[in-house]
Amino acid sequence: MNDTTRSARTPAPPRMTRQRAAVADALGDTDEFRSAQQLHELLRSRGDAVGLATVYRTLQTLADGGDVDVLRSEDGESLYRRCARREHHHHLVCRACGRTVEIDGPTVEQWAASVGAAHGFADIEHTVELWGTCAACRAADERSS
Amino acid sequence: MNDTTRSARTPAPPRMTRQRAAVADALGDTDEFRSAQQLHELLRSRGDAVGLATVYRTLQTLADGGDVDVLRSEDGESLYRRCARREHHHHLVCRACGRTVEIDGPTVEQWAASVGAAHGFADIEHTVELWGTCAACRAADERSS
DNA sequence: AGGAGTTTGAGAACCGTTGTCAACTCGGTT
DNA sequence: AACCGAGTTGACAACGGTTCTCAAACTCCT
Ligand SMILES: [Zn+2]
Ligand SMILES: [Zn+2]
Ligand SMILES: [Zn+2]
Ligand SMILES: [Zn+2]
Image (cartoon, rainbow over all chains, first blue to last red; front, top):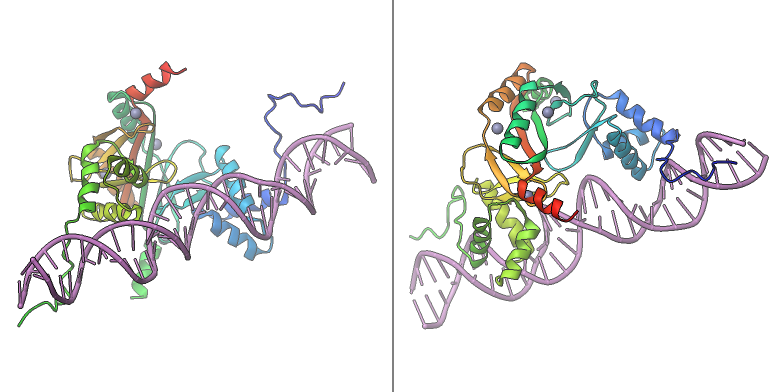
């Protein structure tokens, strides 16, 4: 008896492909939040191109698996980054270059949970992101004015 | 001599129109965060239709003037609401119905500012929003399962 | 090597939002 | 009340990011 007829409950085996590796790589290289399109372009210029759709799919998968963090830029674009810690945390991101500092605010966590509960809300989630201009970008800005 | 030749520095005189009033009204009615499209539909069904583009423009103007708060839903749509307080604050929003509780976290404010400064970032802004399922929606959900 | 099933990618489709511009309105003037 | 200049409207096109489609290409297992 063979089990090629994989039973319905078996999720689906991931598969290693050049594309997946490339995207994962690109993310590993940078320490900054990057958009799907930026990554797509980066890969293209780097020589091993990957279809845009694939970049999106891969990022989504990585995000679902908790391997990369996603956040929405101020103008609605999704930005991705492979953070050092897998545990829940927040970010201080440079609006200009994407440079990021990982933050964790134990206080904020409790505060969020308690505020939610206090008003009878369930399944509370919180969005806490900090945006600013990093020292480097500030300097670059001065120089050109 | 007349001054119909308005000097360049004069900003621009706002004008009261049926449309602007309608949108403001719709926002005044509800206490929940609503999308531009929802408001557009609401107005249409209510009898005094307003062009979608105008709804967007008006909301933007109101937002710029600080008359309404804007926030991005988890799937990227902009949501608008006329909050009670004009001062800076945050929200606890029901994912399902938009019902909202205004929140202010003095602690969070300071925390955000200091964390940003500590890492040499300037022009710090913070996004702090809480999402959950309100008691009412939770009850409705039970009932239908 | 062979084959079942997964993944890819070019391009179309989607969807919220903004731009276009001629027709229309508001509000102050005559 | 009629007039007029300038702000405003709205149907529709255009945009930009993201997802969908599906035939061709590839992985992985035997
Ligand atoms: Zn920077
Ligand atoms: Zn947190
Ligand atoms: Zn609700
Ligand atoms: Zn705040």
